[in-house]
Structure formats: C-alpha cells, structure tokens
Image 1 (cartoon, rainbow, N blue to C red):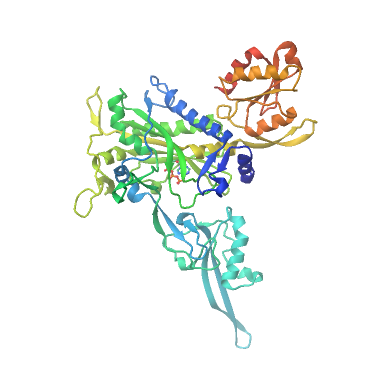
Image 2 (cartoon, helix red, strand yellow; image 1 turned 60 degrees about the horizontal axis):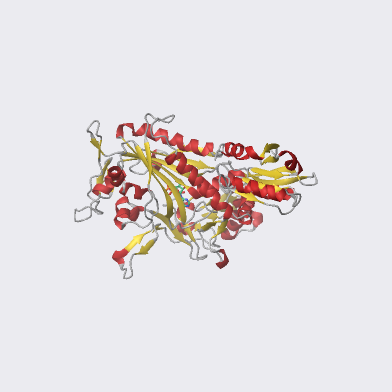
Length: 558
Ligand code: ATP
C-alpha cells in the first residue's frame, strides 16, 4: 500500500490533520478530525471494555491459571517530580542526538543509516620493460555516506553520486568504489569515527557533532513564582501513575492479587526526530495495564498477557502477516526485566521486512514498587540495589511507604511482580488505518468498473456504523429515511445523506469505512423493507424497517 495515498485520504476525509496547520504545522503533533476522533475513540473504548469493564472477574479466561480482577484509574499528567527521579526517567530517559553543522539538522544517532564506501586508486608501474606490472595503492579512503532514503535500493543511486563527489571521481569511474552493492543500509556504531561520516543532508564529511544525551521529558514550571525547584515534567508514560496509586487502590477496593489496574491517557516525549505520520509523535496517548501478581506465578501471567494482547489486535482485524509478536533478546532487556515482547506491525512506511512497535509487554518483576518504596534502583552483581550518591545516601529517595501486599488467606507478605502490557492508542489507530486501506474495482452508477477506495475497518471500530440514504429526494422517501436515521441514532453512529447520485454517496461512505449503507427506495413505500448494502462484499439484502436495529447491532457487535 502506498503511504502517500493513505496520508492524503486521512486529510481529505478528516481522519488526521497536522496540528496548527494554518500556521504551518508543528512537527510531531497531530489532530484527529471528525472521522479520526470516532475511530480512535472506538479503539480506546474497545480496549477499555475488553480489558476492564467487560472483563469477567469471576471466571478464569482462556489461558489464565485463575480468575483475576481489573480496575481502572485516571491520574494527572503532572505528578510529583520525585516520581520521575525514582523511576529512572530523570537520569536515564535519554536518546543520543547529533547535530549537523552544515545542514543545521538534528538526528537521533541510532536512526542514522547509510553505507560505508571504499575508494581505492592504484598506480600502475611497469617494471623491466613491461614484463611485470605491479599495482601500488595510491590512495585508499573510507567514508560512511548516510542517506534519508527509506529503502536500501532507493538510497543506492544517491549514495553513489555523493560518494563520487566526496572522492573526487567522475560518475563513469564509480566502479572504483567498493561496497556500493552492499544490499543493506547499516547504522553507526558509537565507536565509529564521525570525521569520516557524511551526514544525511551534508555535502561533505565531518559535519556531525559527537552524540549528546538528550532527555525526552518535557519540562514545565508549577506556580507563578516558579524557580528551578518548581520544575515539573509532563508524564512520558502513564504507568508511573498506576504504581504510585497502588496502595490507594488496594486500600480503597477489595481487590486481591492477582489483579490489574488500567489507565489510558496522554503522554509526552520530546522526540528528537518525530516522523512517519503519527507513529512517532511528541504528544500521544497510551493504554497501559499494570498487572500485579505473585512472583511465583509471574512467568505464566507474562505468557498469558502476551497471547491475550495479540488476540485483541487480531480480533479487531489486524489478522494478517503484518502483525507479529517478537520476544526481545537478552541484550535488549532492561536491567530489571525478566522478559519483554513487542507486538509489531509492518507499517507501509518501513522498509520491506521491518516492523514497528505497537505495544510492549514487559515482565518488570518488583522493580517499580520497590523503587517507589526504597528509591532509585540500579543493577549490581545481578541484584537490584538502591543507587547511592557520593555521600553514601540514596541518590533519589523513594516514598518510604510500604507497598508490599499481604495475602489475607495465606498471611504471606510479598512485593507483587508486575506484568505491563503498554500500548499506544495512536500507533494502534495508525495500524488499523493502514490495514483498512484497500483499493478494488466496483461498478459506478453507469455500471462501469472503477477503482474504489474502501476502508475495511472492523465494524466495531468503524467511525460511522451506518449511513441512511433516500434513493431520491421525493415520494416521501426522505421522510422515511430521516425517521429510520433518528431511530438508529441512539444505538449507533449514523449518518444521513440525500445529496447527489446514490452511487457517489456509497463511494463517500466506502472511503469513510462505513460498513452498512441503507437505501430507502420505491419498494420501501410498498413493503417497508430497505436495502442494506455491505461495504466489503457489496451484497445487498432487504431488511424490514422494524428489524433494522437488531440486525445491525448483531452485525457490528455494538
Ligand atoms: P519506541 O522504541 O518506538 O520509541 P518505546 O519502546 O520507547 O517505543 P514504550 O516506552 O514501551 O515505547 O511505550 C509504550 C507504547 O507507547 C509504544 O509501544 C507505542 O505504542 C507508544 N509510544 C511510545 N512512544 C511513542 C511516540 N513517540 N509516539 C506515539 N506512540 C508512542
């Protein structure tokens, strides 16, 4: 699928707009239009209902060893600054960035991709009257040429042309370049010599600065007089709000371990290079669960949540090969994690074979609750210990509150382990948009085959569930259509349209992803049935007006 087509559809039909577009936009910020807001709300509501309100606390779901409870939480975006010091975000939530002195652009170090190119010039010497020739290497140089191209093939021509310039070669002599057939683009290593690197937008080598740490948290100041001690942060994740409320939830409800606390809401990260549409934004929404369980059963619960979360995406239509679950290697794991998997999607803007993270499911052990009790933890000799500053005191002090849990049946006291399924609502929405986009051939009003753009959303997440059309604007058809529209409205999002040819109205709804269109025609006037057209199969059937609500509700699982 061509990403440009999707991006233009999103703007044209009101799924997504650039934030503050009339002022030239703001990089890394996106607004959801009238259709987009419904789509995203439906995805968030599906998550909340499937994970929290619709969850059966009394029975063990398939794959779970025992029943568990789920509750929700909604906490503030700005929290006590100590939360972020203890969690490690203040010290560690950094990316490395480099600046280009020539182009004035900034890049995330780990996202620079390119090729190492070698140029070898040889001198030919004739010895003993042309009997023997020896090759003497006159010059040998290596340069890393970074590229902005998305695919290795697309970057090759550009790389060769730039390499010729750097080495002072004519294009016809490009065969003197070695390694120009390297199929894959490679990233830079922290030990690479940046004086040999040509930045993605630079014309010569050595314009990139050495990588510097950049904290991704947005800072703000609390109160009118705010000085340095009043600095606070916009949360970079919703998870910490759950940990610091763990005791409140235990004390105010009768939840027993194992149980989960869910929260969805805005998070903010000052990403160095926001890109790929909404995939990497600076303001985005997360849907997170912290699931608290006994340390002994935590490996099983980790397995359970991985499968449960993959199933959630599959049930909502991300069913194909573009979705995968990837277990992290040992080297990729955070120092406290006993296991992490990502649910990934092959977004069309990524090079073939690459996947982007939709959700991470992490086994976090007791790291978070212990940190908020004792202070910021670091790993030493395979153990987590409180990090000390030079004076021997904790670098960042915890709350000192007891966040352990006592099982009232066994009397055992322990710090629960945590499994964290952490999803992004915007990345999810983007994946559902990509997956939904289809082009097929369908007849227009004159019966001629035309290319049709159709957004095949699962009916549960479709922004509009049903559109109601009078075939013509006379013979009492609009009145009946409006009556049906009003009857449907309390049950589902419905849209009324009487303008233009009916074929064109169908097309507009196909682009919006509306699964059903109802047409009130001549036959409706005689027998009370309406035509129900299915977006994907294009099949039409007649259903009596009185049975419409039940029939549609069953189809859309509303
Ligand atoms: P990445 O490696 O892509 O930056 P991450 O591993 O830092 O992501 P987490 O901290 O695990 O992400 O956040 C959980 C989820 O939040 C991600 O799976 C993603 O869906 C979402 N998310 C994180 N950062 C962003 C962002 N900048 N824009 C949109 N969604 C994001």
